[in-house]
Every structure is written in C-alpha cells, then in structure tokens.
Image (cartoon, rainbow, N blue to C red; front, side, top):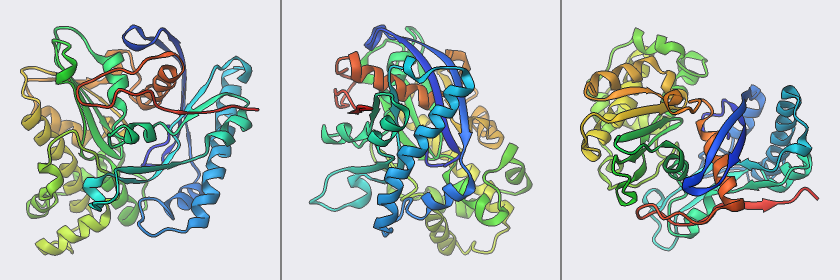
Length: 372
C-alpha cells in the first residue's frame, strides 16, 4: 500500500484461511520502506493536478511497478522468505488523481480515479502473481472507487453486540461503522474529510518537515476560529454519505482561499498548522455525531493520524462516551491495516464471492498480472 502521504511503501506479509465471512488472517511480517525525497518529488509533479505532464505519468506508471517490485523483494529477503513461496501480491499502486462526479461535476462523465504502478511490471520483477488496480471495478459497478476499507472492515472488524467505528486517518480520513446487530444494511463506509494531507502540506511548506511529529508545531500555535469556520464551510460536509474526496479538493489552494475570505493570510505558521489539525479533528467529530448516533461505540483508529497527539486528544475529549484506541485491540497493527485490507481484497479476488454490504457494489475487485 502506498498512500497519498507518500511516506513509503507499506508491505504486509499475510496468511489467509478461508474467504468471505469465514476469513481468518495472520500478519506474519510488516515493514514500511521510506521513499527517498527524489521519488516523492517526481510523484508530486503529477499528483492531484488537473494539468500534468503526460510523459511523466507514462514513465512513472512503469517505473513505480518496477520500483515497488524491488521493494517487495527487498522486504522478502530481509525476512528470509523465498519469493517462490508467496502466492500473490495485492498492489494498490499509487493514486495520482481521484475524481468522483461530486468533485469534477461534469455531467457526461462518470466517477473516476487513477492509480499508477503497473501490475505487469511488478509481477515480472518479482516473479509473483500480482493483483492490482482494485478501484476500477468498484467504479464500473456504480461506486466511487473508495473507500475500499469497507470490505475488509466488515470481514475482519465486526463484533456481535458492539457498535464499532473503524476510523482510518491517512491523507484523507475515512471510517466504517459496524452495527452491533450485524445488519449489513446499516453498515456505513465513507470519507469524512481531510486527514493528514493539509497538516503535512503546511509542514512541508512552512517548516520543511514531512509532518508534525508529536504535534509539536500544533501545540505551539492557537486555533484561528474564523479560519476554522471557513474551512468547514464546504458543500462536501453537507453531502449525504457514502462519499469520497481527496487532496484534489483539500489542498493548500483550498486553505489559501479560506484565508483570503477571512483575512487570515498572515497568521503565524504555527497557528495555521494548529488550525488545520483542529479542522481534521472537528470534521471527524461532526460527521460521527451527525451520522452515527449510537451509545458508547468502540472507536478504533489506524493510519498515520492515529499518532497525531493533537487530533487524538480532541477526539477523546469530544467522545467521552466512547472507548477510543488504535486497532491493536482488534489484532490489527494500525500501521499495517490498509496493506492488510488490500491483501484481503486479493484473497477475495482469488477465491471469494461478491459480498453484498448495504448499497455498495457486490463485486470482486482486482486485475491479474502473471509473471511469465
């Protein structure tokens, strides 16, 4: 799994028994191999941009497939695992543009999304059957291509008698609500707003840091209430769920426009990071309080945002009637959760059957690339 934060490649070595509701899994190994800055810069040249260099996209599609293959082999070698013993790779690829209809608003065009990092290149590089490009089938069947955490969350995260919210705070924040009675019609999986994307972007621009470690910058600043209200004033937050979004909307341009409207262009950089951190936290809080009205839910957090002390402190203060912890309590490494979920989608593609969950497309996702 490689997310929009471009931290590195998450590689999870998993074992599976069964499929569907009978799925049992084990996480055998996990590592995140950081990306060098030069690679991040190359991807950023085309990431979430309406106008991008077509040659760069074409070259990166092949390059990332090979590069991810090299990193997979590096991880396997480090674990002492022979590639011949691995049944398949489930590769998310690298998202460079997410364009649901609610965002592009072009009547003649459908929902769309684009991930690069060609599966054939990965398969040939590693010699391992590769399943990739999972999001396209979801869109073809009427979905928005995200968040795909739904399927894994339902199969791995539910517990009879307990209302659970599985909250993932990556570049974008998304959640899955799993009702205590197990009624699939009540399951809700949706994006809720920005996760780390704006905080990280501001840290890169104003502090030359990849992210706000331990929320040190946020805690040095103060929330600008006028700017916070402007950031929260967007139709996305009023739209019915399920819905998706991305850095195509929640970018520094979005922030700068909100600053212009409120005359806050010259606030301290620390205050900006603090306000953006609060924006992420309040957007999550507002969505849950409006859409998941249950008593004493268990909230399980994963993704990089699970380590954001500022955001987590606000959520714990906002939901005093809930238990809040990371997904370790579910037996799932919070850093590895998304990689695990895509491996599960690969397992379903190989030996599963479409699962009907609410109004979500009941489809098997993924394209097969053979090594030879």
